[in-house]
Amino acid sequence: MSTADEKSRKAAAQPSGSIPTAEEGPAPADTAGGKVMAFFFIGLAASLFVGWIVFPKLLYSQKKQPIDFNHAMHVQEVDNGCESCHFFRPDGTFTGIPKLDKCLECHEEVQGDSAEESRFVNQYAQKGKEVPWLVYAKQPACVFFSHVAHVRMGKMDCAACHGNIGESQHTRVYEQNRISGYSRDIWGRNISGFKRHTWDSMKMADCAACHKRAGVHQTSVQTGKGACFVCHK
Amino acid sequence: MEAVNRRNRAKKYGMVIDLDKCTGCGSCTVACMAENNIPFRKDESDKLLSIAWLHVYKLTNGKPFPHTDVCYLPRPCMHCEGHHGHSPCVSVCPATATDYDEETGIVSQIYTRCFGCRYCMAACPYHVRLFNWWDPVWPDGMEKMLNPDVSVRMRGVVEKCSFCYHRHQRAMEKAYLEGRRELEEHEYQTACTQACPAGAITFGDLNNPKHAVYRLKKSPRAFRLLERLGTRPKVYYLSSREWVRQAGDNHLQQEKQKI
Image (tube, rainbow over all chains, first blue to last red; front, side, top):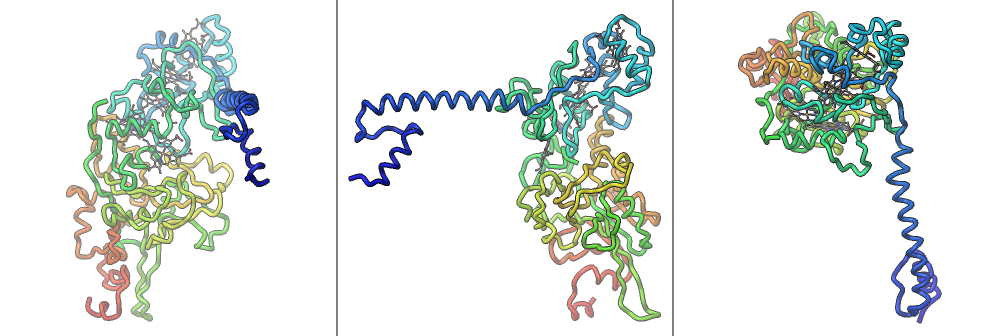
């Protein structure tokens, strides 16, 4: 006995690839089921393609740094390695990206025949205009980060969080999340969140995982993990 | 990385405010507003809608002239310890937006996590928590004067005094550069403490015998607000005036006569 209701339910169930019941007989279900499965896999592949490849492309806008800065070459030119440009002030704060006056020590005038250098000297150095660098590692405004705690007390390497920027010859493309406005380096290249390097992403969970391993101020009453005011302000 | 426990010696940052010295000038409130990027509006006359982390209250003994006496009472967040850090607000927050740090004894508020349910405002017996009914609007050019160490709040979240925690963060950076893990008393002071022209506010670690607050909190003039609720606030007040000390709690008529 089958009511009209049940029949319509069977009909509705088929396109979604449900297992055919014995009543329907094997032969017609096989071809129909095969087509359904084929459509299913095409659909799955298409949605995975959209979700894993198209969506991340659409989600991030691409920006070029205003000047193509060559780290590898400059580290050779300066006397004191990274610290010539990235150092700590006596109050413990980190200078971050150097200001124009640092560049002017050598770039008052164009010294070589590199087109990029003369562009830099003409557009910024001689006009006294700061270069509006884009900071790949930039965290949202509510985050407090301390370089001195990691570099001096934690004895950590710049590369552990930044990768090989210090040895790069060209600045890479800066990708900005169109929704949150955050740099892609926060969430990371891999949309699934898997990391191959320590610097692949720097989300709250990444900071917190290392802090848990290293036992950094795991003193929150609510969570028993890192206290919020360690990294927030 | 080796599994060491990197937490510094547990502290209990707190404040002692001498009400006999306070003149009610309001410098502390002004310093606090500037330090912590506190928004304000053109018309601040409705105090239910306006925001000040440190509010100065005026108390009177209610007696007619010539026995009238006035006392001004500055009121920051009490950073209640409650029972093992379960202060009234921390216990009720459904979002973990407010939290108690066992290491510093400071009650934090993370604005980006807060979704504005305002349970904490209802739970707080001291009215220290305030709600942002609007996005902040700064007068032209003032955005450039904002303190970069304090994040600006948005519409729909609760905010409150943080004991200028960002000053602790900055002070720790200097200490780390010098290879230290402990701060001197003067290295971490709140904006209101430094602004008070009468020197009425003292700030420090209530656990540290070398800090002034350690001695002051034991003074016979010391009391705390609504102590009998068991909130264990970390702000102490000093007054030699009996009626002021009594005003700090809700006493029944017969209790008042006893004291």
